[in-house]
View 1 (cartoon, one colour):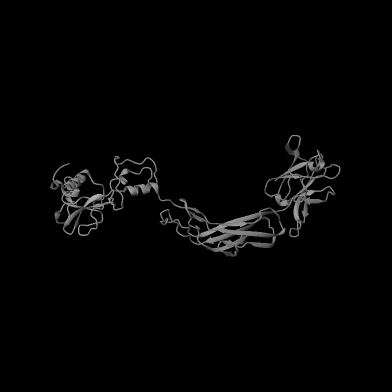
View 2 (spheres, rainbow, N blue to C red):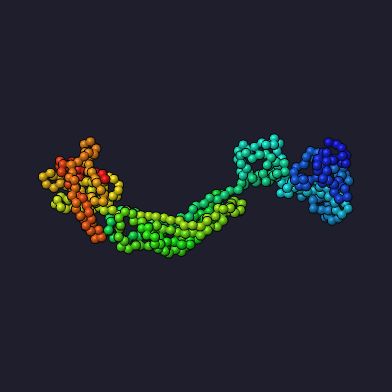
Length: 417
């Protein structure tokens, strides 16, 4: 476009109506993107070219940072590469100098101007710019190139959180009801962690310091204090504990203070993400059960606990849950219809049971002849005296003994309850 400077009006661009192109006393001046908050339109650039053509021959060019009234070496332009001419005034003297182009929003970068049709959306994520972002929200003065690249290359990242916890440790093996033993309780605590997903050192514990620690035994409602120093908790030993029927339970509770505010990758607080304070718990228990008794071959009146009897691998040894529903039994002596018979005594609290016998030839279990049971009591231990049992005696055909002791003359039973 070629026309006199006076002919650029608001009809060409509202900029000219705002008189941004006129300086004090009405002198002509260039239009800068930072003055209008966007890149120049073609007509505004044409105006600048016209002004440059009309003014360049009238004013002297000075190196960047020098002015007509005070300069050291007017011909030293060694530091002015990639700068642009700017018309300025020193007192009453106009002059040209060289400056770095500033972005439209003053951020130091050129404004991003896209040739895409307004309403065009991004088809995939790029850094902090998600799929679906419209070109309108980025172009024409909204973002500089520097801001746009920062959004793509350095999106804000947020930490993840390892939750605080409390841990109680103790033996969970079944024990005889009434038995006395020392129960060792181990305690530990963890305040969690704020983890920087972008690398580098993590931010520290998620929860605040421990405010209180205590444990409870068998849901008694009585809380026993636990000694702690920082996150180190001191364990305890409960001496001469008498095993009760069912679950013998301990519960550790650790209360944490409010945690510090987590920060994102640019150092800003992640709102609402701090640990709010609270109590974490850990529960451990073991079952108290009565043993199963097995007949021994010395006398029809002698029995031994299954937990101490020598049994083969299939039968196993040890105490059995009184609610498990199925228990395998081996007997290590010959069953003889004319003499000593196989016998099994179970706690009366198990209720009604049935006994099956293993057929080693077919690998199956089947009905086995046993009497209806006879009440009996056992002194299980010093704290469990005269416990009610029912002893069942084999009345069907004779069976062998356990294969471990009797070779091919094997006998194995299964209790269902």
